[in-house]
Length: 315
Image 1 (cartoon, rainbow, N blue to C red):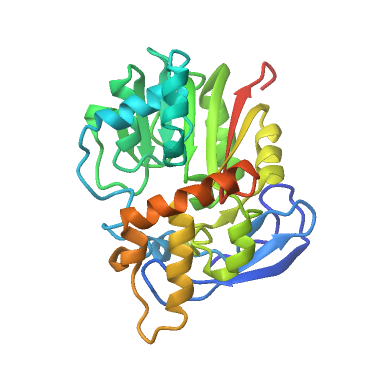
Image 2 (cartoon, rainbow, N blue to C red; image 1 turned 135 degrees about the vertical axis):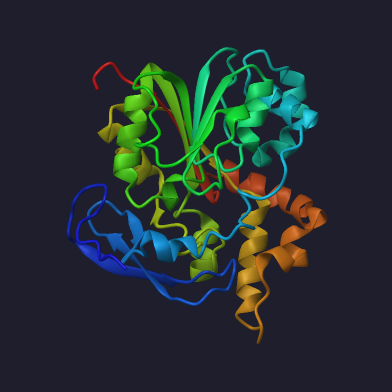
């Protein structure tokens, strides 16, 4: 465990205990302290577990590593509908109820896309089919995936050329890394001037975070080492000359259902793992949550926030 003395975003040493959490997804032992920077509001686990300890909380069955990639033409169609300039506006309205299930994307044929923390490459496979030149990096996958240009390793060690990517995405990633400031700094160097970066993280200012507290599904200690809101995520981007162009608030059924399961587990003698919970894995329950998801998203109180930023001329 490594004690952090300074805030990763602003450098302040004014850190106060904020919340306590544990690995509720797999019910592994360990209690983790979350602290909050009194200057900028960044929340993070402190002290932080090292790589060896943290690897225990990323089993092979972890959701982003598991499962064979199967082509999903409907998902590809909806990505194109929602995010391509050529997407049909009528179809966008028609299928809007499903919008929370789709992470923000930029669909430009021929654009060079890097997905940092890409897992087994599901998103990249969709983008490749839609005409993008795709690349990925992830330190936790078992091996390289040549068909999608995915490399196993850390962002700074896999040998990508600086200023070579049109689009870079980090979805459900920045909260996992031990040094978000260095990660965004490195990503910005890989981005072409005028290129865009999409960052999606849990929103610690969301209403469910406040309502469920330590049982909030997106708290996810110790995998989620850092927690952001619009202010702290924007400040991190601007620190590295990434100009905010768009902000999207999202709430997804998992956040609601997972939080309910974790809260119910507090009253059970033997807590249920998330993968074995009917509530968390029910498609019907997910669909029933969609109206609430849209209300939370529209009110900017959703459990996730996504920023689209552009690399400015000054680096």
